[in-house]
Length: 115
Length: 111
Image (cartoon, rainbow over the protein chains, first blue to last red):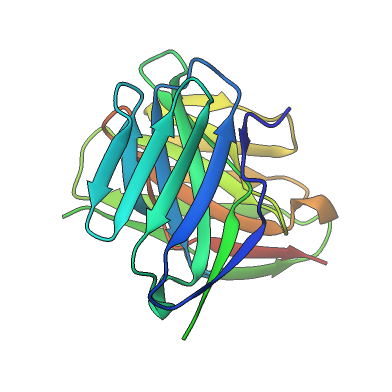
C-alpha cells in the first residue's frame, strides 16, 4: 500500500518555463511534507518543506503548495534551469513513537530541463 | 557544520557473503539515524532507524540487521547476502522531528 504517490515518473520542461511536480498521499496522520532532489549516485538533498498547517511555502525559485482536503501537494520551480534536472522525491512525515519521526517517500519524478 | 560519511561508495559481493556498511555523523549529538534502500526503479524504503545507542527499530523483515555501537555510528550488516539485497543504500540523520539529511550512499551489487 503506497501511502505517498508520485504518479508521473518523468517530466520534461523547457528552460525558463515552470516545472510542476505533483504528489498525493493517503495517510491523514502525515503532518509535514518535504521535497528532496537527487542526482545519480548521490544521496538526496533536502530542498523545501511545508507544515500541514500551511498551504504554501516559498524559497527562491521553489514553492510548495499543500491542499490538505485533496491530500495533494506540488512543487513549482520557476524559472526552470538545466541544473534542476534530477529526480525529485516527495516525502511525508508522521510520528512513529519513541521520539522518532519517519519519512515515507514516493517513487520519485525524473525532471529533465531542456536548454 | 554537520557531515555524514558512508563507506564504501561501491561494493560488489557474491551471494552468501557477509556485509558491513558503516555510517558516521559529525557535528551533532544524539541524532536519530536511519538506513534506507533504493532498489532500481523504486523509491526510498526505510530499513532501520535508531533514536539512541543500542536502540534499533526494524521496518522491513529481511536478512539485514543494524547496530549502533556509538552515538554517531550506524552499521548495516548481513550474514549472508541475497541477490535481492542489491541496491543503493543510504544513511540519514536528523535531530529535529522532520528533516533528514542523507549521506552519499553505497551502491551494492550482489552477484
